[in-house]
Structure formats: structure tokens, C-alpha cells
Image 1 (cartoon, rainbow, N blue to C red):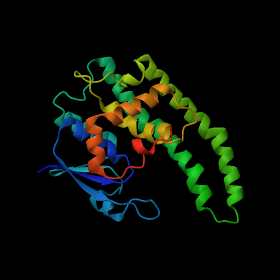
Image 2: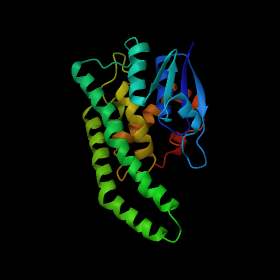
Image 3: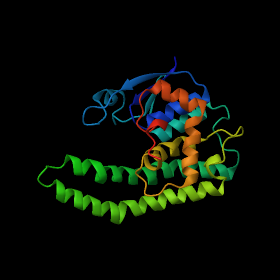
Image 4: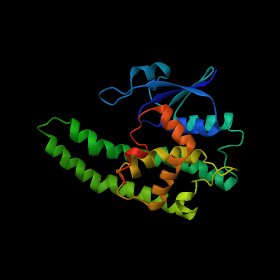
Length: 235
């Protein structure tokens, strides 16, 4: 029985489709659509109590959280693919996998919250004040933090060879590892999506290179509309 990917539009689950295509693993997609409020539907909560995407089912196993899913798929189905080639590379792989969701994504979520959600969903009579406060928070705290993190990622990738490199050096055949599957989504939404105050050339080249891979293109076709794909780039 093939793996089932519970896929939510415009979400981190796109990275799981890309990984499965790179590994050549058979899978099916169960689509879940966001409501008018852009929240995940109840159908995802029926699969896993957290009600978030991605989630996969593999036989009797249900695995949630994209980092855990990436690790599980590479360990179970990779057969050496997606595995860094040295102890130092494995440390890099772990670092960037955690950096993506533990450091970079929280700041991007704050940018979305203060830059879009709060100003547009507050009562109209206080909206000007909310916009002013949100702008101050973004300019004083969120953007400087985001600039620091994006600049750091760009500089570290430059040390490895720039946009032609992988964050952990790639596997034995020069293909991406877990770090890349984890890092691409925040770079798509932040750097290419126009939320980052800086756009390091290495990261722009890196994202474009990932998006040009045949496996990524197949995942994009199977997953359906994706707001952060190549056609949505603001650069």
C-alpha cells in the first residue's frame, strides 16, 4: 500500500512531495483545502490531533511534523539517498533542518502576522492605529531579525559554493539532503516571496535551482496550485 500524503494547499507539505519524487517512492495524495479564513480544515484533524500539514500515513504509521517526516522517509526509503557524506556534513544537515523551522520560520510567521493578518483583520475603526503599531514592530524588531537570519544563511551557503551548493553538501550522488528539503520552503516564502528585507544572490540562485529540478516540477504538478512556486516569485 503506497504512502498517503495529506497535502494542504500552500503549505510545508509541498516539501514532502518533492522529497518523495526525489526518492522515487510511490505515494498518493489526499488533498485538503483551506477555508475562506485560510485555516486548515477539520479533515486534517481527523487524520492527526494537531490538524496540521504535512501528515503522512504509511501502513499503520501516521507521521506528523515535516522534519520528522523528512527524517523518516530518508531513513526508511532513501537507501543512501539524501544522507550526508561525512560527520561534519551530518552536523550541518541537522543544524539547517532545525534552523529552518526553529529559527527562520517563526520570524516569517511573525512577519505575516504583523504585516498582513493583524492590519487587515482588525476592526476598521482601529485599523490605522493597528497598522502604525504593526509597522513599528516590523521595522524595529521583525525585519532586523529576519535580515540577520537570511543574511547568515546566504553567507554560509556562499562558503560552500553559493547557489550551486547544498546546505549540507549533498549526498553521495550530489543530491539534496534533509537540510535542503527543510530550508526551501522558508526561502520560497521569505526571499522569493518578498517578505525578506534582503535577497542574497546565493539564496535566490539556490531556490531557482531547486525549483528547476525535475522531481520538484513533478511534485508541483501533482500537488496542484502552490502560492510560493516559481511563477509567484517577486524577484
